[in-house]
Length: 350
Picture (cartoon, rainbow, N blue to C red):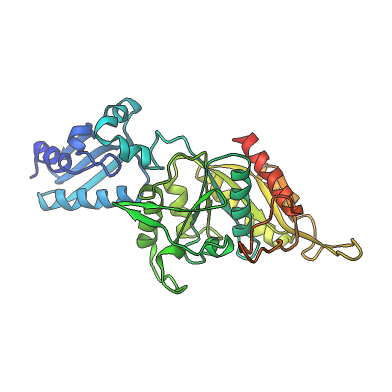
């Protein structure tokens, strides 16, 4: 039967995925318990950050190593290293911790933009909110986390790809917003035909391998609904605020409530609701047509016990052929001013 010393040696030689330092050096082996009659090993391991894709990979490696050494079954619990332990390793692995957005020492504010269904303008809201925050003097990053339906680079008029320096990816800067997207890593708008683990690994790379620099806000354009990618994002983030986008239509608001409920269940905070496509206003007569009905935004905000941050009418941005960004509203555009107001509310609430 495997011994306690063997357990310490096997696990201790593995590296903390954030600190890139051996678990023995970090003091990450918290508890070891062996039940000889059942040949069962229980361990408790402390990491710099839990809930990541790397944690799952480490868990599989631990189980595999202990079973090869003689354990019939393995139980693993994870906890996080205390702040003083993280501080101790700043000198040897500080750069990895500082550059890792998932590190507990990173002070960036995460804001996830979610919706219950597609087609409500969630990506448009993500893009313009990010640009508006940058216009208000904030350091902003934007992750296009809608891996199957990536659209942010096209909406922002980005026609270049990130640069790789060493092992770090340098995001593309556009309108003062640092952008990373799956679109940069596929050829000719090819479809992404991946399963959950691969998607989780790519998302984790966006957080840990991109040279974001100092950020005040990192916005995430989540895929619609409550599927695997959204769940991965919720699990990875140490804490996050969330904005739910809906249209005025009652069904859209009803479905969007699921995304809000998911945020609450994962202990994230809902900043508010944005109602998109609220109405169409005729340029000739000034008459408003409520194309998708009325009341969806208010109803959703009431159900989630949060505030309605703004109502955005249907209106196209003013296009500049020399600096084409088909979905970005100018600072003086009617919707640009509405987005600026929403961005200011976000700043006031975070």
